[in-house]
Length: 146
Length: 309
Image (tube, rainbow over all chains, first blue to last red; front, side, top):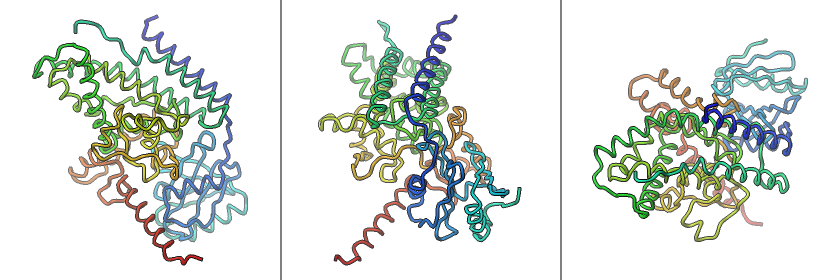
């Protein structure tokens, strides 16, 4: 075996050994908390007052509804555990598809193309009403039924 | 070159592994450092990929460096011990400017963004290195060292030591070092600020080893206890896919350049700071800092108006 290949294999064994150790030792809580979502949102949009935060059924995604209704609209998703998140703003969302109790968001981003949120009936109705009454978001984002 | 020099990073690999294991156990026992499995895996894969990419592109960098040194060097410095010290200082100065441009020019940011894409700050983050560094004009900042006549082999050796030094500063396990050390050298505290995305910490502390460069060129910001660092990008990545991590900013540049009207805007998408757009629809770090400062002033003004009870 060429020494370069042996070295590469050795590195890969090391990589997966450390990964296994981290996976085993550290907690894997995948739930978003409203506090974490709020902090994430206010870090990027400190001037925006939050009206409500709607968390999905699986606690992995959340929508932040600003009080103004038209300045921005944030969506946060947990990626690994709850310490790794992605926050999107309205202008990063290319389209919203609405199905029964769920929203599918198409994202205008190479690293993060789309995701789906499953919501309780109450949250679904609240978000649906918010989006449909928010003309600014509606004019930026294509909304249609699935 | 009258003697062979080892590759410091290759020698340091066992040390890297031992230190990561120590930090892992320390974090597990105390909760003072955090790891996330997929994040760590991505960092380590990026590190492995970086060594492969570095090996593939080394021929170009080495050939260019020796061509400049062989044909245009002004003096013969020889190989005395003090030449190594001069080379180390000059290489660190070059590193400072490469790093600073890596944050201020989108072309170079496209390669460097990888290192900042983790939302964690631990020793595995140190290994989250670029795959595309050789596609940027970074090497141009080192050419003056070859032009004054220092052998590129010495400079590459010093750059290796510089890189090894920077490994240990990627940790939350060490709070502050002694004051004299914090003044002169890059430390975990200074580098946490560099990796933070809090508006007040953006574009600061570019030093490799000597913190003196940031103090001299006005980019030094100390870590404040009242403002804990939050790590990652201003707009976080949203993926653990190594290919997307490595290439996302390049894809963004290409898309923006294709969509831009006029040659000037196309070029500016390449050389202007990250976040620049012709219509100001995205935020550069300067805009984020300015906005945060305005809000802070506004809040302070509002608090002044509230009468004390």
